[in-house]
Image: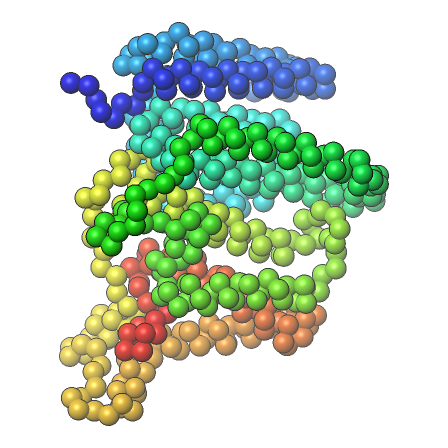
Length: 459
C-alpha cells in the first residue's frame, strides 16, 4: 500500500534539482566576483593554516552544488531510496524548538546577535554564506511532507518571500549604517554626501519605474498561473476553519489576543501604537541621523524600533503562520497538524494565585460579597480581591516612569521635559507589556494580572 503522505516524490526530487541548479549558477557568478576581487582567506590550523584564494573555496562549493543538482535530476525515479533528505534526528531537534518559551528566547537571542555582530554580517562573503545556508535549509526541509504543506500553501508563499525581503533590507540598513559610522569615526564624508548625484525625473526615474512595473507585472502573472488562488468554500457557521487565522498582517494582533483581552489587544494597544507613531517626530530630541544611515548616533531609537518590529511583530507573524496549527496549538515545522492534539493548561489569574496559594489563612477561597449586598459593596469586594494586580498595574504605568526618569532615563527626562517624557515612557512600557505578559503566561500560566469579569475588565 502506497504512503498517502510521502516525504519524497519524483516531482519533488526533480523540482529540488532545479533549486540546486540555480544555486550552482549563482555561486559560479559569485566565484567569478571573488576571483576578480583577488581576496584570500586563511584556513584553520588543522587544515594547514595557509592562505588560499576565496574564489577557490567558492568554486569547490559550486561544483558540489552542481553534483547535488545532477543527483536530483538522475535519481528522481527512485524516491524511496533517495538519500538526500532531512535527517530524522535533525527534524526532531528542530521540532523541539516549537515551544513558545524557546521560540521567543531564540528570536530575541538572534536579534541581539544580529545587532552585536553587525560589522561582521555586512561583509559580502558572510552575507552570501548566510543566504546560501538559508536556501539550502529550505531545499532540504522541502523533502519533508509536513513542511511542504505549511510553506506551500498559496497564502504562505508570499510570507516566505517576505522573510527573505525583510532580511535583505535589514542587512542593507546595517551595511549603510556601519559604513557611515566608520566614515564619521574617520572624519570622512558620509556615503550619502559622496553618492549624491542628481538625476532628472524624465527619463531616469520614469524609465526605472517603467522597468520595475513591467517586471512586477510579469512576476504576478506567472505567480497567478503557477499558484492556485487560496479560495475556500463559502462561509458557514456550522463549519469553521481550524485553525481560523486572520490575514498575515494581522497575525501579530491575533497572537496578542492569546495574552490580552480583545479590548486591550484589538483596541487599546493598536490605538496607542498609531498615536505613538504620530507623536514620535515631536518626542525625538536627537537630530542626528536625519537624511543618512547611522547606528552609533541613534542606538536607542533604532534598537527600540527594531525590537518592536522584528521580535515583536515579524516573529509573531512567523509564529502565527508556521507554528500555530489546529486549536491554536504549537506545532513543529516538520510535525503533522493533528486536530486531536490537546495540551492540558491550567491558566490562573493573579488574584487566584494570591488568595488560594500565597495566603494559606484564606481557606474560604476568593473574597466574595455577601448575598444581597448592594452594588457599592460588591465593587469594594472586587477591588479587595484584585488589589495586588491593581497595585502592580498602577506601579507599572504611573510609578515606574518616575523611577526610570531618576535612573537610566535621566538624560531623556531632562532633554524631553515632563510631558514628552511621559508620552515616551508610556509608549515604551506598552511595548514591553507584550513580552512581559508572554513570559508570565508561559512560565507561570498566568492568565490575567487583573481579572474583573463582572465589568469585562481584564488585564
